[in-house]
Image (cartoon, rainbow, N blue to C red; front, top):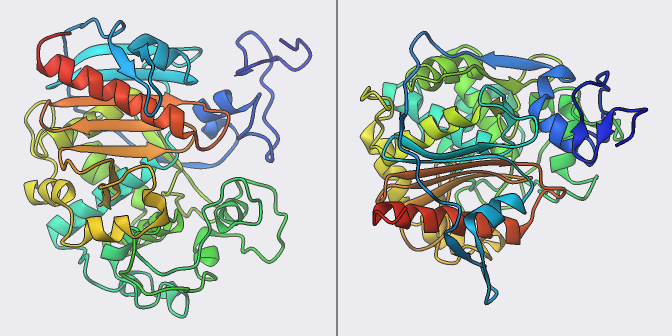
Length: 406
């Protein structure tokens, strides 16, 4: 530990004067773990408020720790406890048919603590769009520019809202996280999450989206681009005529009975960074996941998501798997697909994932009724071994619980 700065290997430690991470370093060690849990202390956010009602989980502890979890591609295994303990975990929990069977908070994270979700935010945002579609306020088959006319003349012209939720526009955008000139990093300059190194980048998120061009047909192959969900946030705002964070609160967070407030990062003019800027408590992520394994119903039986939306998400569109198979992003998920803001890691249509860089995950298995949540601080944005070993850990726990073996 460095007594001068107050930072240990995982970030700021208790008992020391808080040091705000430099803007160009907060996503790296030694600041990352602390930053992921305290984004609101150094960057502007918009609240996603809970309501008066909080749904409650039953408690049914199970012994998951000794379960053997096969390595994703090597002939070896580790226990569930070892997988969680060696993948920079800040917290994890498993629920089975609405009951918490395992839950652990590591380091400074506590049950009420919020953690930056990175791209798990996309799943929350796409679900909010689905709720507006169910109410008739949003047409998924309408042009994006019907709701966000500021994008006329950009690469989004001609794209449909459906193309945003399924990541199938032809907009030019690089998701190379380690390339400071890639659009995914320029976007951070636009919203103020990184120092301005490219003076041509606008000072707002919507302004940046309007500069993006088109390089392929809309509705073609799956092409994972964070900008799509930011555009979707503005679509939600245009359809509902209020901030998308307030819409998420009113249509999703409050109806599902969230226990804690959440928030989303914003730019200098209040535009929400819905591709990766939501922070929330782990138990509320489990509440969200349970909506999908419970046919759209909250823990107390309240109807939240329309069943057709849940079924459409698990089933996919008529060519979702074909579009996914044709993509370079499908390498580690052969036979899978991407639908409505969620990943399907294989041919089964019963297991889906919400994923974010640095190790954020919600695992949902509608056959076993199991939801797994993990929030993490991986040193690098992407790590295939950590990702798929975590998926396997939740998968092993899921089927053990289903068989009554845990």
